[in-house]
Image (cartoon, rainbow, N blue to C red; front, side):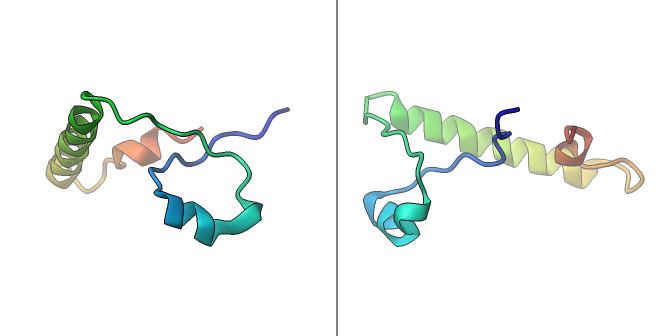
Length: 69
């Protein structure tokens, strides 16, 4: 069975250098006119998720916990 993806990150060249040769899979992202809008959309979605989690009753699990397989 293939390894399950557990994280996706946006790293710069210095970050990859610090991670060293143990970090074997990195995919370059071309900077396009829409890339900044993608980052803004991710920030907005993250903020909305956090607001929703803060407003949820304490007995309900956080969205990230509900999605765990």
